[in-house]
Length: 506
Image 1 (spheres, rainbow, N blue to C red):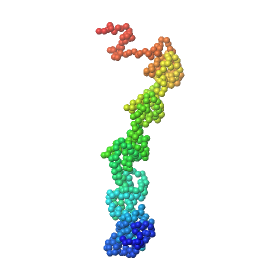
Image 2: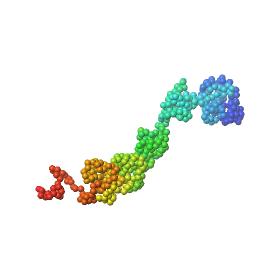
Image 3: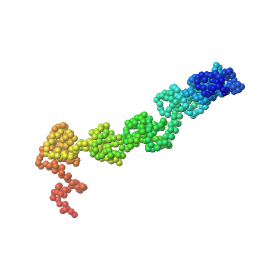
Image 4: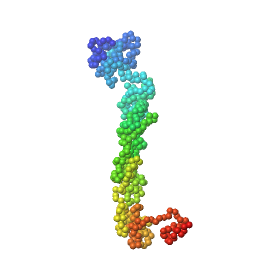
């Protein structure tokens, strides 16, 4: 290219609009006619073809102005491109490709388009499987439109993402990498897939992450979705690990939603990595440590603790003392005096109760609890509180066919047998007693081992055995084996009296 008329001006260093205009005027003086008739150089037979409208040309940026970019195409040929076609103005001296739109007869320059050149280059080099970059520009009935350097492409809804999206319009305005699925140059139809690129990128990320993760390693992730059996935690875009419900807490978890929620950020521990299957198993409870490891330091026998009733069973209630630590409160340890059929008679799920630790077995992960131990055992001094022959005011609690249960004090009942209600023979208990009736009774027998109290309403007679002696009297021994003929012989004199067994020895 010849030196400009101004000896101190370098075309590649000009930057002001005034310099750009002077450059254009000086470089194109007398060139307009040549450009229109013979191309870039006089006598060049192929010049018209090289700079014909629609041709792709390459040149170097000579100057950048506020409205135009001047491009040196070589052979004294200059072209201009609107600056607005560039997201970022090119650097002076940079090589650039442009599409010839036609000559400017007035200015003697070629009118160029960088944007159309990019589009033409894309159509020229297009191939199935090729990955292109663009920006999602709009939405239509069947999917999204993407602008790839001026080329309009279509993304079907099924190819937008690897996951279901309720509203794909959220992607409008975002940059996107897409893969060419099919195209028609003549009709200028281009169908691309964003999903295939995402899947390939996810596969690469998963392979890299599987190679980098080791069991015991801690990492962070975001809860992406919940299932009945756990939660999927996104460790990286497109890379999920499974947090199973059994690894969420050391305690009992009924459903994953009770512990984690979608969108929650978690620190998790890698439990297992299966590179062949591409699966990652994660744990949350492992971050907190096993609470049973030092349970004996926090819970000791006879210690009073508070817990929440987690669940009920026929044999007792499980009390959550802290996360991951449940103790069993058996039905037998709920009351000193009441005969309970089910724990729901005393507690219900969700109740906060105070209990006493009875035993701790850290190895078997068992803690035994008691509720009745919070109160004194009424059977410890019952003989002192209810001496024989003393009349005791009481109330009829309930009636049965064989007698009535008499409430001596709250939670402590004694049995009044039908034969002890009256000196006269009665057929039914209801002839003499009604539920809630106030009565006077006396104790005739106390069995502390079996926790039974026998009562009577009949007057005391001197020939009755003392209740204390009756309680202390051992039960008669029964032969370990029945005798032939059904007879049971008492060789001590009870039954056959004076028979002497030595006389019948063989």
